[in-house]
Length: 239
Image 1 (tube, rainbow, N blue to C red):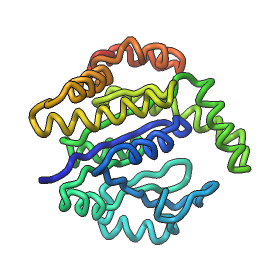
Image 2 (tube, rainbow, N blue to C red):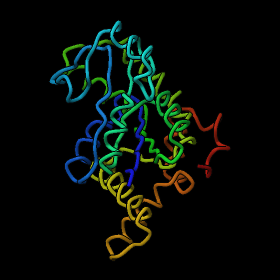
Image 3 (cartoon, rainbow, N blue to C red):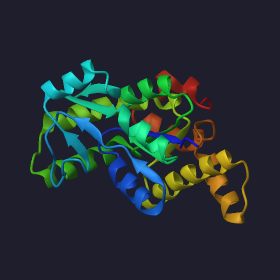
Image 4 (cartoon, one colour):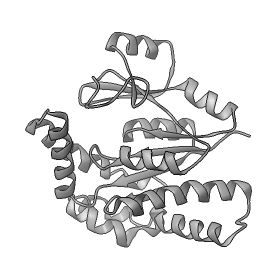
């Protein structure tokens, strides 16, 4: 049986990598798709662990050869997901987790509409800016212009929240990890067709609260803080 495709998107600096790493340590049978990119490694990143690092020339050749399920350019660097990753995971009946931006997620949803999409939000612009600054400081590359660009892009990405089936707000890390794990478990339970234990029921309840249609109270303050609510208030309560 083919596995479940989980698509996770978030603005840069939202804590997505931390949550994904903890999720992978807690949940068995969940493959992680290592994306390709033309940007250089940051901090302690290693080739084939966080990303497959390559040249723009090689990346563009892979595009011409039709090797990507999705690809996009973000802040001058190319990112993409190899089709082979999806084929190999599903051939083994394993679930696959894609960590991709909103451009790539839109492409994947078109090609794989059965995928489970999750959008992770930072709690406020102030928290996001602090996280971006801390990350830049840790990498020894404090760049005010890049921080401003990422903050501006975050608002544009958050406007797309209504395209995702689930919404998480990373205000408390442990809770966000629990919610992410609950979504994975709930989708597996639904695939099997039955909740067998009280813990299964609890996970289903947690996941249900994270559905976009049920998240208005929680995400409204975030949308207001990022100045999104005026343009997209009508999307609240939709999936």
